[in-house]
Amino acid sequence: MKTKPFAPVLTLFASLLLFAAGCSSPAKETPSQTTDVSTMTTEHKQAIEKEISGLIKDFFQQVEKLDIEKCMTYFENTPDFQAVNPDGTLGDYDALKKLNAEGFSQMKTLSVEPTKEAIRVLTDSLVLYTFSMEQNATLKTGQKIKFEHVAGTMLFTKINGAWKATFYHESASAPVAVK
Image (cartoon, rainbow, N blue to C red; front, side, top):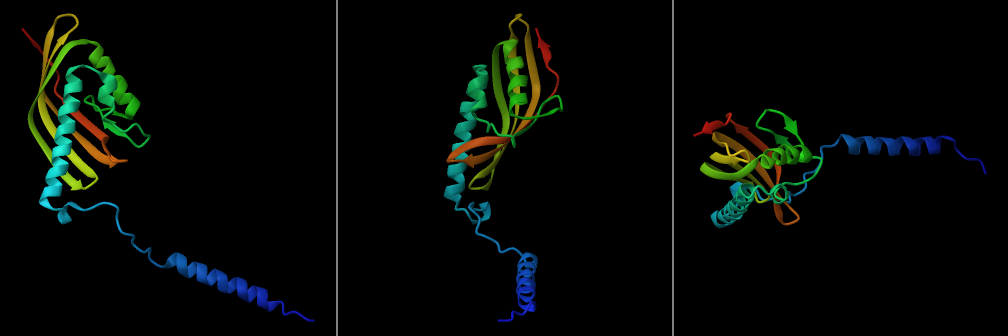
């Protein structure tokens, strides 16, 4: 039996043509796993705001206790985590933990007094929290200092049913000595 050498080449060419056509066609959108804020009910949005508000209250209580280990549980420890520190440096989870642990180790007491807060629900799994506050600290040396202007932003993502900060940015003016 005599075979036609052209048939395998034709089959290969047709396969490549179909593959190329599939690669050049626009991707089909898949339904999102999240709900956009514009389609959320007011009750759903308020429930998320309440969750974040409670989480933030707990977080700042841990800050006042100067408990770095508990404070860091509010952040997602992944390579994707990003922090912008008050001194303008960029860091990851470990850098944020180290910087704050060094600060906490110098303090005997710390109080935080939020002056303005905003919770902005972006989706049912993404929330932006922004704050401004005043902080008063007593150092282990006995010196009292005040951070008059501290502002920050935390981006919370719902991961495995729990809200975790996946981005953190803090800015602060230099502390002033209190007499």
